[in-house]
Length: 171
Image (cartoon, rainbow, N blue to C red; front, top):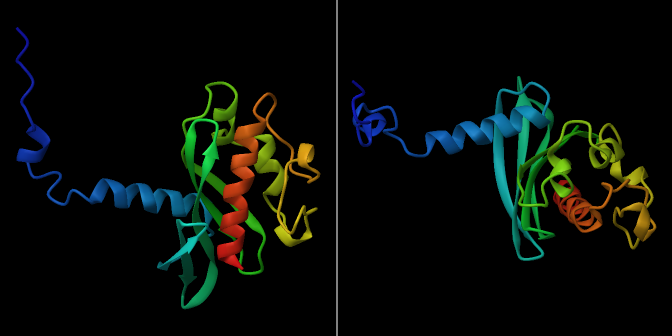
C-alpha cells in the first residue's frame, strides 16, 4: 500500500534551511561552466541599457583567472534570454552558458545546445577581432560574421545582443 507523500518533507527535515542555496549552487555551476579553475569571485553589477549585468572577477591564488559576465537581452522571440559569458584576462571568449530562454523549441532553443553555430562563432575568439557593425557583433544577415541558427534569426540576434552587452561590461 502506497503512503501519501508528506507535504514539505524536505523543508521539515531541514535540508533547505537556507532557501538561497539552490540558487547559489546554480550560480556556481554557471560560473564553473564559463571560467578556468578559480578560488573566488568578486561580483560587480552594472546597468547597461537599463538591464542589470553582473561581472564576476575570478581569481586563483591571488592571480586574475578570468571574468564571467551574467548578461541578458529582452529581444528574444520568446522574451528575455539570460546567459553567462566567460572571458580570459586578455578578452578571449571561453564559453557561453545560456541560463534562461523561452525560444521556439527546436529552433531558437538550439542556442543552449553545446557546440551550436552561435557559440562556434564566438568561442575561443577575441570579440574585438570579429567583424563589427556599428561597433558591435552582428549576425551575418546584418553584415556581421556571427552565424545564425537556421530559421531563428530573431533568437540569434537576441543571443548576439546579450553577448554584446557582456562584452561592453567586460571592456
